[in-house]
Image 1 (cartoon, rainbow, N blue to C red):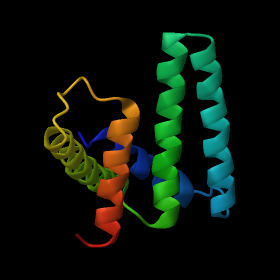
Image 2 (cartoon, one colour):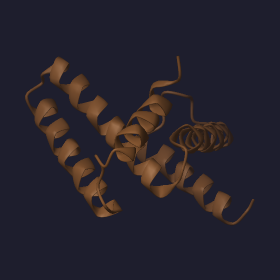
Image 3 (cartoon, rainbow, N blue to C red):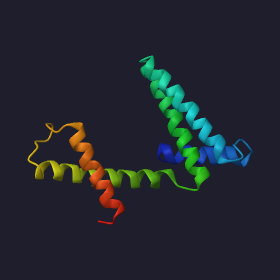
Image 4 (cartoon, rainbow, N blue to C red):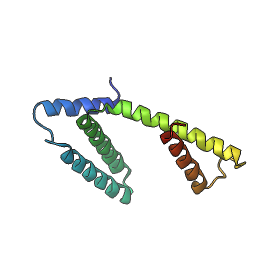
Length: 125
């Protein structure tokens, strides 16, 4: 069985082949925004089953958006995972360098290190 994100991409592709699709990316993005609003409502209601349902719809809409962009969502997520791991490692190193124990840093301190890691990525360091 394929990973769920890849399966969602394939399902939306299959639906597209018979005309069940938006003509352009704006419809896909509108659907994503709708799904995010529905997720917000489920979160506000503290309804765990509804949150899982709506989060699934958000992820499906994201896979459909990826298909419209011609990007494999599994590849995009793997890249995001690599970037997160790399940046988080920079955060850990920065805290160690500053003598701040893990679990003792403020969110602001960690966020500063995170942004430093992002800047370094963009500069190719």
